[in-house]
Image (cartoon, rainbow, N blue to C red; front, top):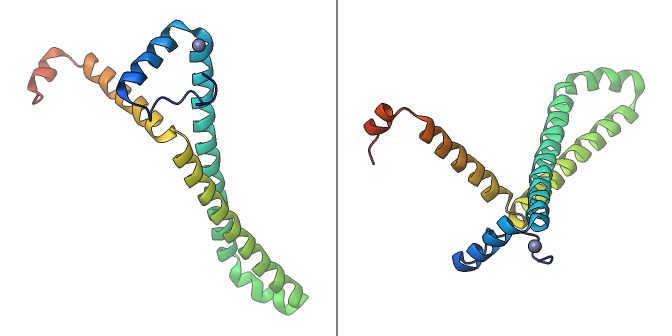
Length: 139
Ligand SMILES: [Zn+2]
């Protein structure tokens, strides 16, 4: 159990049950699976953070654009070139992090993992609801 990255979200239910049983029995494998899942989530968070960072940088650059004309008159062409270089770098960085984020989300079970956590939370909350409220909910 090493090559499949401890990802059991994409396999058939029967095989999945065997694996889940093994995870219960084998501390090593369940620890490895937890590690890989948190790695996936970390990657997803990091790539979305960097996409946000480049979006922010572009917003800042757009904001200081009026200053560019002042600098242009005082300092000449260099600032103008630098501004466009920074905008290009910002757009390239944004594209790169969006691509990286898409790859992470496609290559890892992070979305289904996060969805699973959300479903588990919902179930927990429902279990803790008083019986009176629960009986009001349509089945
Ligand atoms: Zn094992």
